[in-house]
Length: 386
Picture 1 (cartoon, rainbow, N blue to C red):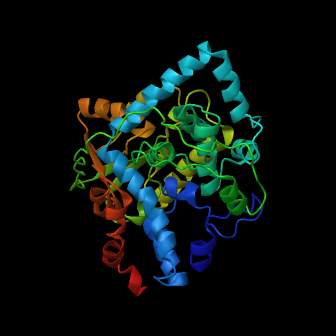
Picture 2: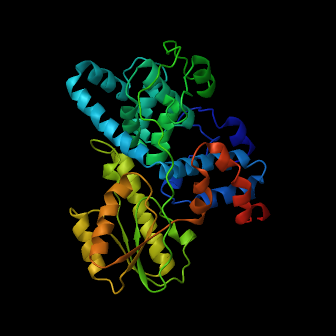
């Protein structure tokens, strides 16, 4: 998390030799480890100055999450584009053949084919490999970006609606209008530590069709904590509530619901599903220990709507606290169920972490405005003094 990360983070020596990156992204994505914890650890071990680059990279994830909250229509547009492109695959045999060759690692491009297989086998890709893969997908193979984003979400253990969607749009020149990322042989040679040297890459980036960025919306107001006994509902988006909710709060019961099946078209990979389910179970266990309340996983039931309503009907409270549902498949799956509970007379309290409250208002446009806030936010937690 210090000098080695700052100098070597873009180098990918391969699956068995990555001491230069933390590989914590799946844990941060589900907040099994919080951003605050990772930033604190980096500063304790390396000092604030040497940990700067690592913390900035953590904040890129925060930026993407906040940006999508200000522009939720971008997620809706992606879903529409993705579904349209899959319909096209059913009619266009040539496109279908090219798509299948790409996702199966048969495109005939050194590096790209390896990354396609590595992703399917491990559920992980180094960040620079992701950038190069997306660029080759778009500009060399000329495949639709939404299909590539869907392929990533099918397999990535750290699959996240904001980071994945906006990273693909960034490579395509849609997130920052006209600024594309074009993969080049020399960069791939350097960043793959000499493992790959593809000769047949596009030499220019064509304009990728896609929706323009809408005007930013105001963030929804985070709900306050109820003043009486309440129940806690956890989703896959925040699974370390013990790091920000006091253990003495009067929690009556805890339930968990994951919605990872909505990440992509078709079936989510076994590795990605297993990691998400394991993360939820781990989060429920820690929350149960923290609050001294029984925890129940409702995810394996065939009718999640009925299971949640049955669980809620047994409560002695009408207040349910839910860590904030960010834009993406979790909100799409869980928000209607919460509306049902409100119809049944329950008060739903969606609460955001202080980290998000302090950073997200600065994520309306580019990353630089958020980056300028990092020192003041860190000082808020007195991280420089630990």
